[in-house]
Length: 265
Image 1 (cartoon, rainbow, N blue to C red):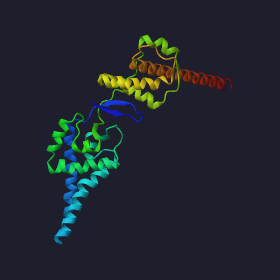
Image 2: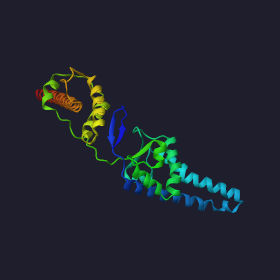
Image 3: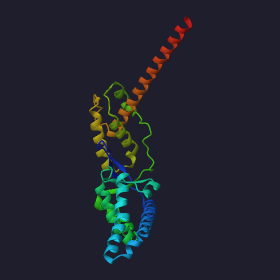
Image 4: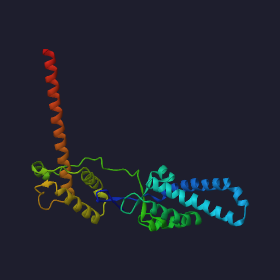
């Protein structure tokens, strides 16, 4: 399982894209870029009738442009999504989960010229199977890997209040928890069952420490990080719903009062 660092520096687990999906995406990209190369060579055919030096320079420049430069620009501009990856719901990200930069896209494409086109993808297959993050050689050199954007997320599940923390949570003073921190905590809770014990402890401790800055008093001693986070988010949601219900009731009362005044008039 690969680790992903969110924008607020919280480490989360995210599985890399599967080999079959990646191969299909690579085939789509190869067809597109190889097709563009053939088209470019056809258009530039008259130049190959000139002297050998000119023909060689034009050929090399055309190959590099179509198979390295263009894919680099596309991948960098789309933050890791070529046409094949877009079709299969994949994206290239840095090892820390951030969007790739032009330098990393260039390293991937330059290496890919050798490992994909020169060896018909054989090296890529072996590299992906050997690496725990399903990285090809270009990913290893660039510090990137490919993830699936269509991986089902469980973040929509509502946090549940641990019964033994309900009394503490209702009396606790909850500050204004930043949205990104709340989202990171929810994502952590939705994926905690898929984490390794070490990652679960590391991420839970970090999130609990960040949440503790907005909560007083602290939870009972010995409270697990995931229970603490779940209690805080559940109580935060309960209070938000209560506040919204009170505001709605107040608006309803004002609406009724306005309607009665109009009737009297």
